[in-house]
Amino acid sequence: MTHRTSALRMAGVLAVLLLFGPLGCSRPNQLPPPRDPSLVIKLRWIKSYPSQSKSQVNTGLFWALSFLGAKLPAGAPVLSWHGSMVTVDLDAAGVAATSRAAWQQLLKVLKSSAEYRTMGGIDIGRFVLLSLCSPHQYYALTGISRTYQEFRARHEFEPRQVAIVESAVSHGNRLIEVGKGNSINSVAFVAYEGSGALKDRSFQKLDIETLDIMENGQLRFGIYELDGHLKETATRALTEAGKPSKCLWCHEINLQPPFKNVTDLQGYYSTKEFREFVGRARRVIASYRTTLASKVDFTRWDDHSDAEDLYLSFAEPTASRLAAEWNIPLADVKHMLESRNLKTHSHNERIGDAILGDDLYDRNDVDALAPYATIRGPSDMREASSYEPNLLQ
Image (cartoon, rainbow, N blue to C red):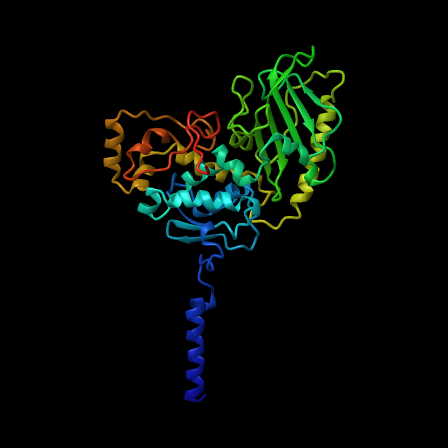
């Protein structure tokens, strides 16, 4: 081998190393330049419990974005990690064209916050709380029908309704309409909450709840006033339905059959017929989901809990999490919390998992202690909130 040939080969090896890194591998976790920088945001991962892994955070982010309508093509470069900071490219994530402007506005608000400027990114938990768990943002990002009249115009319904006398959701009776057809776009349900009884025809509609399917195969929920305008939450005096985020939490990724109803009324579809409608719709959805090449695997339905963990652990932080979040010594954080007599509580939702544990604080109590100004989240994750941020006005 001549010196010239050897030199040329060495130069080629160096070029490959410079381009791809050692052993010819592409540089890990590096995204190509974004096509739309206004749809890119940096998120901070604060480890919330010992067993939480970066892989779980990835899965949780994918599911949260999927719940918000992103298509998440299987090979798309959506996430890029740099230490504990992850860059999210929502253009690569395939957010719906009709919701791009809403995403751009939301990211603009988040990136202009003192937290973002001070820490170089916004907490992943706050990001999910302000999008998935905030009705104003959820509606805009999922591209839901702006009015109930618009929702009705998108769907055709079966000629009769379903009477739910014994409801697992409503405090009283519930009236349901079922979408007509066998395509994914025909899957739709409407539930009316109200007062009075269906049996004696005294039932009065007061709230309207809707369910349909987004292009990415996820369920989408809406709550409307009788005049057709969207509302933040279902009326607590009528139902346990709560906000859209509670609908998601309850349904997970499935349509639910009636659990308690045993009374059939003349002139309405029977409970048996309703179960058959639900079964038909579930088969349509399952078939449609098999055609999607997405980062979300619908056969691993329990993965959605990783998305819930992101906002649960943020809304109910430990002192240790706050210390890491604020970059303040734990002893100082404990002193701050104790000096204000802030009470702790135990996590009461995923008790069997024992993930979040005890000695948890309420996010509403601790944000004011942060060394930077924050964007306030809703006062409750799923139920009617005394404060709901609208960041898209």
